[in-house]
Length: 386
Image 1 (tube, one colour):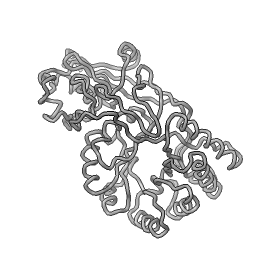
Image 2 (cartoon, one colour):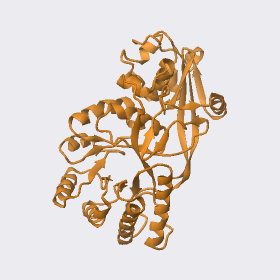
Image 3 (cartoon, helix red, strand yellow):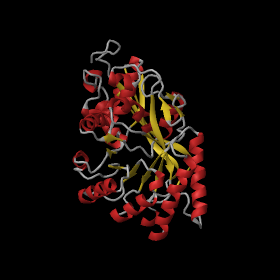
Image 4 (cartoon, one colour):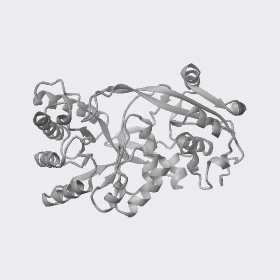
C-alpha cells in the first residue's frame, strides 16, 4: 500500500467480535408487514488489531472466517489505493476504521483524497413507525405522530420518513388508508412547508392504492414514496407516467430489501428515481462502485439504514463520493461503550467530525469485557488451532 504511515508487512494479530445492544430513544412500532420493532437492537461489532493498532466497526463475520484472516498482512488486505480487497468485505468497516486510525484521517478523506472543511450531510429521522395502532380515532393518531415528529424537530431534524401501509395487515384496508392519509397531512402541518417528508409503504400498497394516497396528500408535497409495492416494471412505469400527468414532483425509490435483480436497469430506464440498497448488507465498497454508476445514469443514491446506527456514520463517509447522494437515513440509538457525540445534527444536516476512521470513540476496556463475557476472539498464535 502506498501510504508512508503504514507498514505493508504488519499482520492481523487479533479479531474480536461481540453483539452489543443498542437502545432507541423510544420503541419503534410496526410497519406494513412486520410487528413491533421495539426499543433494543442487537448490533454485531468487530475490533481488529493490526500492527498493534485497532479498528472498530460493524461486521457479521464468523469466527471461522476470522480465523482465515488472522496472520494476513496489510498488503494482503488492501489495494494500493487504500481500499479493502473484495475477498475481505466481510470486515470492511473495521478495516477502514483501522486505516483511518493509523493514518489519522477520516474515512471520507481516505476515499476522496480531500480534506473537507465544515463537512455536513443531509439526513432524515427514520423513527416514525406505527406507534398509533392503539388509537381509536384518526385525530388521536395524528396528534401522537405529530408529537413524535416535534421531538425530531427539537433534535435538529428537518426531514422525516413515515411508515405507511396500515391497511395491508394491521388495520382494515379502508380504515388504514384513511389513517395513512390523515397522518401524512398531519405531519406536514407539524413540520411546516420547508421540511422534506418521505413515505415508505414496505410493499403494502398496490398501484391504485398508491395513486389514491398520493392524490389525497398532494398538498403535503412529498419528496418520495418508497417501496409502494413489490418491484414490477409495468407498475413502476405506469406510476411514473401517472405522476407526470398529475404534475406531482414525487420520487419513487426502492431496493432496501430483496430487490429484484434488474432494479438498477429499471432505474436507468426512468422507472425509479433512486436506489436504496442497505449500507451494511450491500457494503461500503460496493456502494462506491454502484454510486458512480448511478451518477453516470442520473439516478439518485439513498442507501437504506435501519436497525443499526453504525450505518449513520458509514453513510456520512460514503456521501462525498457520490454526486447524487440524497440523505443519510438516521437511525438514532445509544450503543454501550461507543461515543458518537462528535456527530451533531442541526437544521437537517449532520456535522461529520474531522476525526480518524469513522469518528467514533470506543471504550476499549468495556469492549474487551463484553468480548470476554459473551463474544469471541481469534489471535494470530491460535490460527493453527481453529
